[in-house]
Length: 463
Image (cartoon, rainbow, N blue to C red):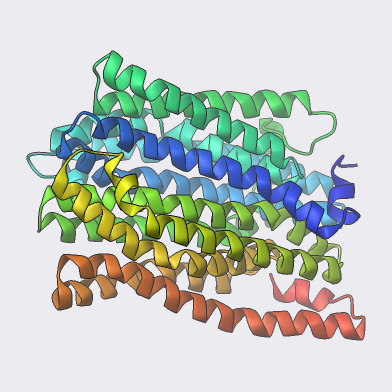
């Protein structure tokens, strides 16, 4: 029996939600901070081209996060639902499938990206001033660092599926803090500059991966998680369930990559300072996004477990509680980022034109924090119960379908500032569509709860 079963079944919902989401939010924030640390310490060099190079490489690095989400969130959802059904063997096989497949996929991706960097880097917007810097960063962060980056993030999702939110968050936080410590050592002390930032990122992810492996080995008698190859299987619909449920999160990252590449290519037509400015603004906005992501991902196991065990009342209470907490934090984040834009951007780089662009872009982008908060919880709710179509639609809308056309139109209409305004336009629109998809599902659950129907039909419809 899982030692966190009381958390899933009996603990008061507000307490259960807080115990799951607080560590997850903290780890997400630390992860964002260490990503920002790369930009911060590189910015201290005073070279906008190196800051721009990090921004240009970031989409290629974010694809690793998408890969981790594909197997991590997909596996986490299926593990929590399997635990709710009491199927421990399936939960174990899901964890092994997710770990090994994600590791192999990461290795292939890292090797291919570095091998074809001569074609890829110009495609993402690298020019003569940034190409060499991009190549140095790509070697360590993606070429060598792909496997530990994907595995550390996937491990955190899978560990969280059993209710080990604090342990999952500690692993990610440890890696983030280590990265922050190593950044100035490799960037400034050793004089590696942009390559030093990538080396620090790679080493911190290696450390986090090793932590999770030791954790699983130490808890092997009480956990369903395993990475023993003997439990690897392509049967029991495991690949289908993991990949389709994790696909929306992967697509969100994938489309975010294309969106960032498109944005950078539009920005670079103005100047490298604009690219650096939007890169800094995006990094800062990731703080608010980290809160929304931590809130939604943290509560996913609780929703999935109670949905599969047909405790709809507890599940709905968890969703409501998370909505309230997440929206309140989003509003606070918006106020902070809106009022402190100038000083925050100035802390990253002492270049007047980059500061001017970055401050303006941050004020524009941060107004979407409440919209993202609502959308992320709805997407995660659908993923937690095993829905495939709704989260995929919402992920595609938020990044790609809405924001890329908006960038084109707004760029033609009001120029460089219009490129930044595309983000709030897309996020607000996708939020309203998310609410439109959420309401019928919610009414269906309420009706089943009133009638006392255990809703096995709902579980079938989610597959």
